[in-house]
Length: 168
Image (cartoon, rainbow, N blue to C red; front, side, top):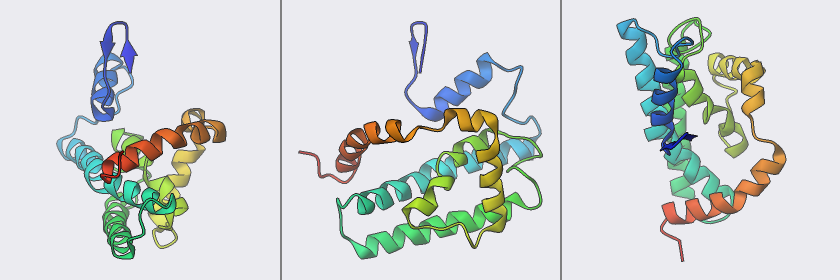
């Protein structure tokens, strides 16, 4: 993200910056437990699901053929999904009745899992949550077009190869 002469390249830092700059529409709750829940979901998504998506994508793109690693990645995804399912409870979003950063961060990864071989069928609350996100007008405006995804594939291949230590 570039804002005048200020450059940020890490997604959580970008969210912090936008939250501070545009605080009239807060995405971080002020209640202690809700704030901790948001941060927990953010960190679980970044630290646990992101490597899973990288592994699943690398398998799908044919960079690796390691069934054991693929099974481990799917099991890790299911562990996080089980936790997220229980965390949602009866709320429409992770920490409250309104969208927070937890939903935005998790929403960048969870909805992609079915296309990578990890269905959400057994996670009714998480499936409903994902659908709720996808129905938001602002969410639809930010989803990449098929052309943008196609154009990003060579960059993704380079990133995955580097992540897996396969870079030339």
